[in-house]
Length: 336
Ligand code: CUA
Image (cartoon, protein in one colour):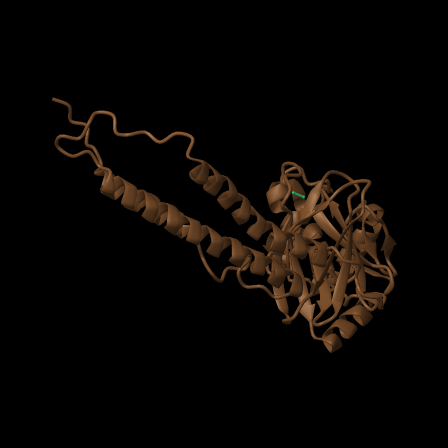
């Protein structure tokens, strides 16, 4: 006799349902159903239409099926082969026209939203160039002459016109609460325009597989009040002040004589352009493209060995001692 225990199908079904529902949440940081911009609202509008249309179809098909199964079920004395219907013109027309109408009902609002969200940005829009790198985000504000990385600041209520371009492979810019995905393609300029309507911090993620650390390519969009945004821009333009004597000053000295300066810009200190601009690094909440809180411990660990935190990170380990890495981290965290 076999001792294999069989799990009852009801329990299996309940377990599968539990797993499925476990993936659903209404109010998560990357929820698409809690829009905070005009663009995200437009997409939710289409999503709503499609959801209701689908629910309607499911009801009609489900109830129709239930009726047919009950009405025409085999009964004692039924013939083996019930009467067959072939070439019924009205039926054929109905199930050709029906789906076409459904598709039309979905296509019209979808195409309207595509055109509305691809329109030229208004002239007062804030222009930002987004560059996707393996594996971090560069944000340049050409009119303001400032640049930042991984944490995009925008003012609430003002249209933001992103121009997306990529120096290496294809990435995809996606901040679900502010709108849909838009690819960042080398050799091509894509645009994305949105107006954020709530101050706050919104999480985003690269949404196109772009190599080993694709999953480690997150970002934040910080939606500021107009005053806070003006203050943020002013802070980006100030040259960094001298750090206090001690680890921070030691860190600056190590930074200035190491390979760091070849890749990073810190206004008034270095002008490297391969890696993120670090002028106000300490004011960011996260590091390494949004994957860790921006603390001295995390930054020191990163400087010691970036690839241990982000596999195949382009930044090399610089061979610094623990103490040196901590000094550089202290200096960088002090850059507000
Ligand atoms: Cu960049 Cu995935």
